[in-house]
Amino acid sequence: MTVEASHATGDVGALTVPVGDAIVIALEAAGVRHAFGVISLHNMPILDAIGRRGAIRFVTARGEAGAVSMADAAARVSGTLGVAVTSTGTGAGNAAGALVEAQTAGTPLLHLTGQIDSPYLDRQWGFIHEAADQPGMLRAVSKAFFRIARPEDAVSIIKAAILTATTAPTGPVSVEIPIDVQRASVRVEAPLRLVAPAPLQPSAAALDRLAVLVKAAKRPLLWLGGGAREAAVPALRLAEMGIGVVTSATGRGIVPEDHPSSLGTFAAAPAVIELYKSCDLMIVVGSHLRSNETVTYKAALPSRIVRVDVDARAEGRGYPGIDFILGDAALVLGGLAARLQDYRTAAEFRSAVMAARRLAEEDLRRRVGPYAALIDAVGAALPRDGIWVRDITLSNSIWGNRAPVIRSPRGAVHAVGGGIGIGLPHAIGAAIGSGRRVIAMAGDGGLALSFSEFGTLAETGADIALIVMNDGGYGVIRNIQDAEYGSRRMYTDLLNPKFETLCAAFGLPYRKVAAADQFVPVLRAAIETRGPTVIEVDMKAVGGFGATFAGPPVKTEKA
Image (cartoon, rainbow, N blue to C red; front, top):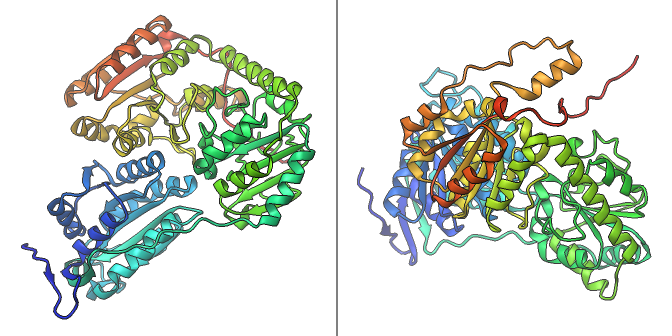
């Protein structure tokens, strides 16, 4: 297909282009530099425009789920809009699980999917590639859904979709474009102008109330979630005043975790829960206070809680509060810091925070046994601006969500929703979206869901050291079976490939660790070589952990 852009008669500063081109022009105007997806019959006009225009790098994933996960991670580490392009029907269905993860993480992501020709749409004729209710499916797994039914609506709808995805609370937005609409012509203003979302201003009265509460507090804490990532500067100012800081896993590094005021992500550690008992104020900023970080809402947080969020539905979520401030995290914490110019907590409290952190770290190292050497190796190898990516695996549940030290607010990515299998595509997206070094960890069970993306890893040459924790199956499930099902281990052992052979098939460098003293030299060698490297950890040879993890707490109801 030959495409020519021409100035529309009588409309100075406008171009007439196919809708596929118009969509790409809008992405460029939004600052998009990377997109991920799988080419198909029903998205070719969009991808053809990306290729011809050359301003956006398109990464060919091996599956739609992987593509959305890559876009998800790229957005998380860059703080910009992620973009994934899929086909219609089963192609869009393949993306649904990854969209659930992006929705759970609150990732600003634009999912562009094709659709069958408009004359046959919604008629249930069994047209090839048709899905019975694709809009219903996508609405269920997205912050919002749009359909571009007419070419003349394309630009305004794409603008609206981008604004919706990037307006807090952010989330994935799906846009469906029938293939005949993608090919049709439309006028586009040049240059295209997009509206940027405005941060939600907190009221001065609310900030005054908060300042009064903090000044009266002797032992105040900040709990920072993923919604506070843009508040790193004022959060650090508050930490410098001696206010204690604990974070969710998505809030890691907002305050550097080696700061003396930081409790890191040890929110549910016994020593930290004990500290809560003596604290007289907790300010929860941009966090759900998720079940796995509050011992299924049983952790006794300080009795006086103030919630800060851009989502009014957060008020009272999980824990009751004494106040709620609706507003942007950076503006709230910045306004608070400005009102606390001479505030400083007592030395005794600052020492108590450091002591709790020390006890939590000592307990973690006891629990991990020989894998303390792996924590040290990852910490030594991870650059200060590097990114730590983890799949859901036994090792991450025990230590990866709390160690090593993270020092930047976009320096860590994990599966917030708890689903396995997205560590590798997350790592690829994080490396491409940031241009920084990535160390990633996945279990053998989870990695099996994304073996096909080894091709994407090799093809892109992404700068990733992928650590595969191989225990021959689903380690967490085995432990649950031991604890709750009479040690009846069923369906948890996996036939894995020979990872060295698998890596050789894709031309990927491979290393193996079979003893704890090999962690540091092997990881150092992998980091010194730019590009992808796969490191298999033979967990049966290295040995078991110092403590057993059998999943998150289970709430049981008694009759």
